Image (cartoon, rainbow, N blue to C red; front, side, top):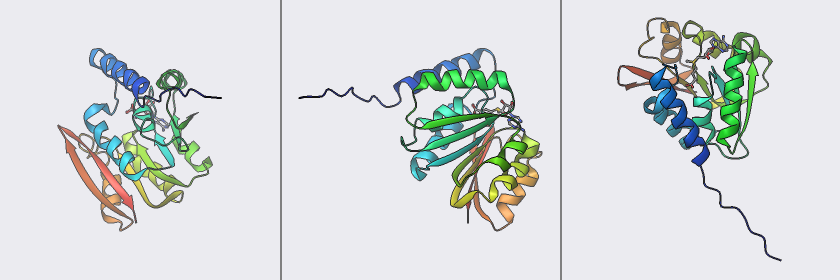
Length: 193
Ligand SMILES: C[S@@+](CC[C@H](N)C(=O)[O-])C[C@H]1O[C@@H](n2cnc3c(N)ncnc32)[C@H](O)[C@@H]1O
């Protein structure tokens, strides 16, 4: 007996959804991480091959798809979104993207949701309310493995409102942290020590 396996064309559906969201964002601005900063996010996922990823701030699923398409099929991404209508769109986009990894969207305030999550996580992407980054991190900190990467968006344009967060990851001695400038913005990439 012979079995015919369908060829797995990695990323094709996901790329189409990503391009459609980028196109929509060029017409009506959406605060997605976008392709340029997203390249660094993808690279960190590829380099670290995390199995448990936490995302704070799903919006319509762009960054979840960007990360999810790089994950192994036994990996899981948990993403939190406070607005139900946005999470519904995210759910549709993520289904369309046919990601290899399992993605769970949780609707709620990350400040309430993070304490209920089991963990441990080996990667976190923080991209919700800028003044709350340090609170998200401190709530998640005990669930982050040693060596976990915490990737924070908008560390350039919102550096002032994120100053408590940036001071913490740079100076607490708990992380090795670097800032990556991308055009007029940047991302802070911190590794838990
Ligand atoms: C910048 S957008 C996220 C963009 C997304 N990460 C991407 O790159 O495609 C921020 C999102 O965080 C959500 N948000 C804001 N505060 C939140 C909170 N406390 N808990 C959960 N989600 C929150 C907003 O509703 C919004 O959809």
